[in-house]
Image 1 (spheres, rainbow, N blue to C red):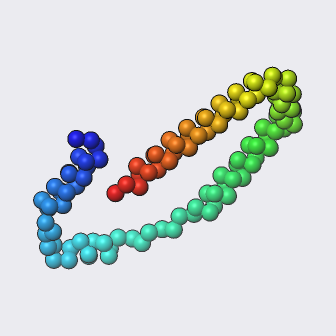
Image 2: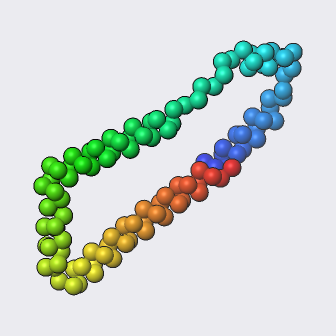
Image 3: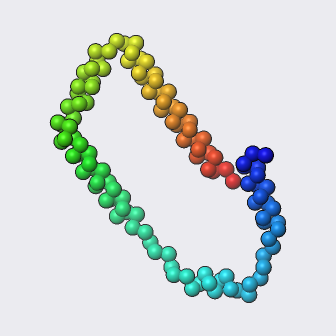
Length: 113
């Protein structure tokens, strides 16, 4: 039995085996006494992360002599034979496609009920 079918079977067994037990409103009273959910500061966190990323990018650019390593790498790539450039482009495309397939399969398995 694969994992998904086993989880479905276990879920079905647990739902059938545990009927609702009347607690005379105890659950409702406990939920009413819980503190309200605090709103998270996601926007502040996003601004901080974005600012730090921009600062790190600027620092890396300055420390790398203005991105000179990119110019050198591009100059080396222009010296490569056409076949090697084609193989590099094809290999990069395969790697990106494989990563996309893995991400899609992972997301699809998360969405299954």
